[in-house]
Amino acid sequence: MEKTNELNKFLSYIHMGMSVYRIYHGVAKKLNDNKLSSLIVEIEEIFKTHEEKITKLIVENKEEATDSLTAAGIVAVCRTKMKVFENAYDVVIEAYKATHMGLLSSLKFLKENRELPSDVKCRIECVIRDYEKIQNKWINYMLNEN
Image (cartoon, rainbow, N blue to C red; front, side):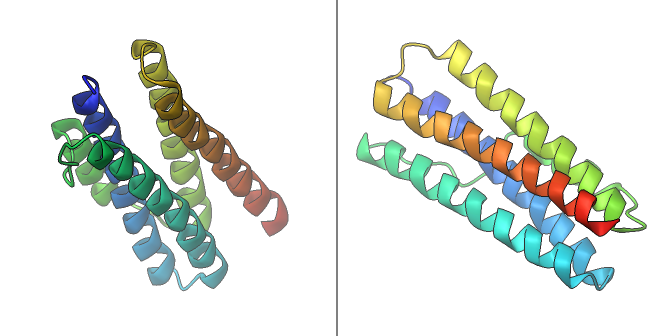
């Protein structure tokens, strides 16, 4: 597949999301917020399935899947590490924004790679639908916390 490099780029964005969520998880533990921590773990599992499915697509095309971040991903992770999270609300807002950015990036990826095979497009569309579900999880968390 000619687009394996593009899929690796997409995979690196998923790795970035996973790295950022690990930071949120660490913050939730420091805040001693078990409910927040549990939700983050649940979301990390979704990201893990994305990593596995996209990696499988790349490997099926006899290419090597990346396990690293792009330069932009490294910067994003560093910026997240530098943020001050004083409470669960801060974490939720940042996680929601990060997930929204992932959703937008996924939509842009599909737009820029219209010639991908339908099975690959289907995988990307699943990621997009999962991002929407994750955003709804954050909304529900906030609505139920008040």
